Amino acid sequence: MQNDKKEIFESVAQRLKIEGFNVVNRDETRPWGGFFVIDEAQAQQFADTYFDGLNVEDLKIGGKLSPKILIVAPNTRLSWQYHHRRAEIWQVVTGTVGIKTSETDEEGEVKKYNPKDQIKLQQGERHRLIGLDDWGVVAEIWQHTDASNPSDESDIVRVQDDFGR
Image (cartoon, rainbow, N blue to C red; front, side, top):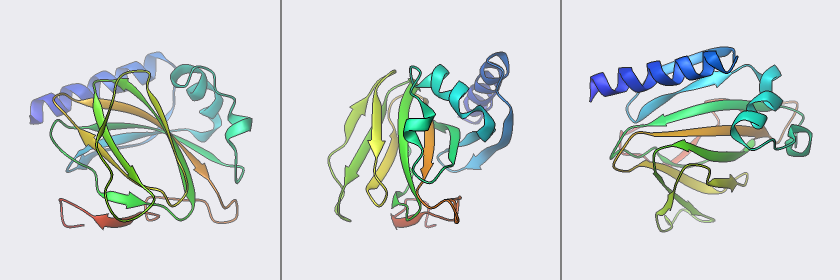
């Protein structure tokens, strides 16, 4: 699986480079896979490429958006989590993923999402991204809800986590 991980990260890195995106952070160390963070100045270009031209001006809640690409390994789950300072929009790029959502700490049913499928997650909504049979690549836009205190990686409240974080 380690070789697969290297290959999928390299292919996504190549794709982003060809599409002209400036990757400002790359993390392959997550137990569930990892992510690429794209330059915020490219939010509209990212939305045009991965979200069928969604207008980023319409998405801005707190004035700031953060585009990312998530890569989730087969048969792994991100933590059951929510955020205080952001809402999120996800669109599946490749592979099939499972997503659970709920208004409470009780986990909802797993729903399958395929390439081009999109889900909007509200601030505070519990959610979990799940790798199914293959590697899943998901485009994500963070909608910061507090301009004076933008969300970051520490803005994760983990209700349950397979990796004890």
